Image 1 (spheres, one colour):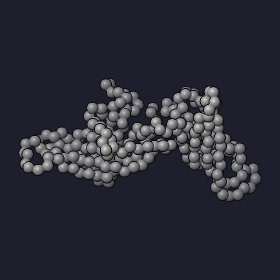
Image 2 (tube, helix red, strand yellow):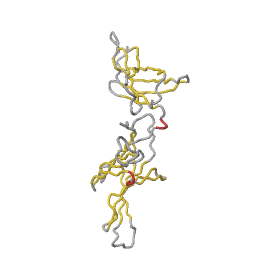
Image 3 (tube, one colour):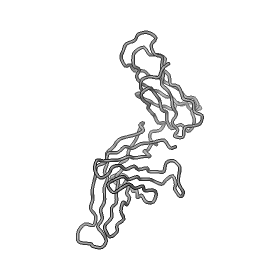
Image 4 (tube, rainbow, N blue to C red):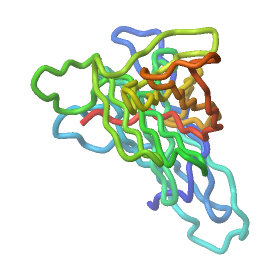
Length: 242
């Protein structure tokens, strides 16, 4: 028995039975022809995975005699009797990769966004809600935004972050420099809705806006705000909560 070369697809289906059973169907590739007895083997967990993702290894028996030297498809099915109630998805592992399928893709939302461009914004990381251990006074609903740009590095949490739903998507904004006598600087991030489907990450493009306000001492005629719009390359991810 050997682990197959790579996994190409994983599908989940809850079978109508009592108690319900989870059918895991996976497809992949092996390096040659002649492989047999494909199977999915669950990894033994001492305790339930904190992210609800259970691991399976995809293995098969290599050919015992000379075989065609061509990458060949292979598939396996595993029926999980009385699967745990906390299962959120299944990850199938091969020699070169892993593929995760989620039990209910409709409920899967990104919990981290990473954005960057080649100009005045080096990196922005946004967490819509808190992950991991909480500090004093923090709650699970508190967002966090990390900004690294030409103005410096900043970390904003909770009430320091403004979020509102607009026709453009979610508008997330923070104050980089308060509007004092010299003028202020805010940063706004436009986040479109991102559906992850059966994937752990999705790439997308969006906009970041630096909002410059004039100082309070001198107020000449004209617009009090000017906008610097930048294209951002983003990755939306659903990462495990540790």
